Length: 408
Image 1: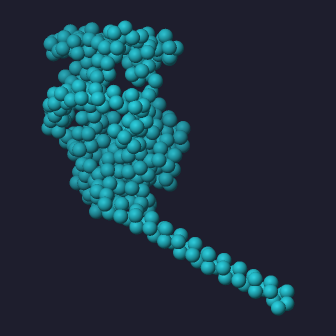
Image 2 (image 1 turned 90 degrees about the horizontal axis):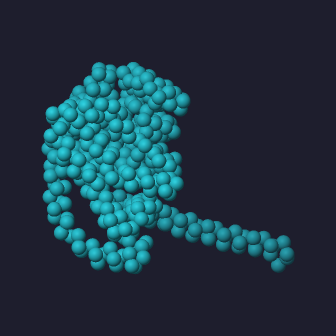
Image 3 (image 1 turned 90 degrees about the vertical axis):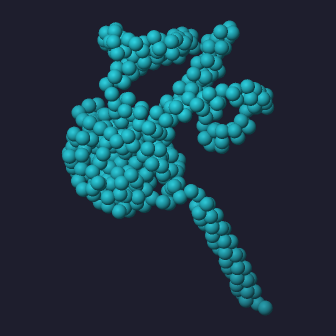
């Protein structure tokens, strides 16, 4: 065999071997991809049908539709920017204030609210809940065209009958479980953010597709969206604020009181309880891996102490559950919403907040922050005529109750 023929045979054999290896690699790659698809499909099939992910949304359903974001506060700005970055046609509706100027600075077309609604096929209602019924009646409803879609970021006003949209429009909800800054940041990082979503009213027959397309465009499907009714969203939101939040606050204040009363330095107590931000890290781990599982990141001493001494507080749960149920019933029945709509509640709110800002913890915090060299931030200003307000007969009878409640 001459040298040239030998080289050719060697090259041919190498080519055949490479082809076989390539085909095997391609086969196993496809097999692996198929397996992943099967696992993904199996996981999808085993999920509840009220949970949605990125692949459930289709941006093409939004083509040719103009979106008006009403309100350019924290949520309004974040969601408007996300929608625009998802190649959506976005305009802003806002009154004459600093937020309107900010929207212009972000290169949005900005209109008066009524005019923005007239121009839009989809309206994002991102103004405060308490302002929305009046705004809706005066600026939104008269300018909504039939077949339009209106999206609420909270179920409150619809759930408790404070806003009643006409039957010729779609009514949907995308309620982020994240503050505005987080909505923007998590869109940019690709993490996404959880939202509660729903179709409350489908006038056009494709409200669900529009809802999921918008949820994808704002970046929420990158995490997950959970379908709940508007009333369920409102209950969850209010219960967290009216039951869990106050109960947790009372536990925290009582803990601080016990520790300082036993002679521990206030600076050390507040640092341990929350200034260090260790608790926020623990909360993050709860979200990432689980409420109980995250304890594995703590020392064995910490775990044993928490679990063995936790039994001492089991009895507290029964009384707490009864109080929580009462709070739930107030919310679910609409009693709270009805109370908050009254003018007396607005006066009562000012008084309660006045006393809340005079709690002992505020004085302790001010001294501790000064001693630790932390910046003092004052975000509360007492009503100018608080003294006259406190003398009102309808308020006077409740003053003592709140003085005692916020004594610490």
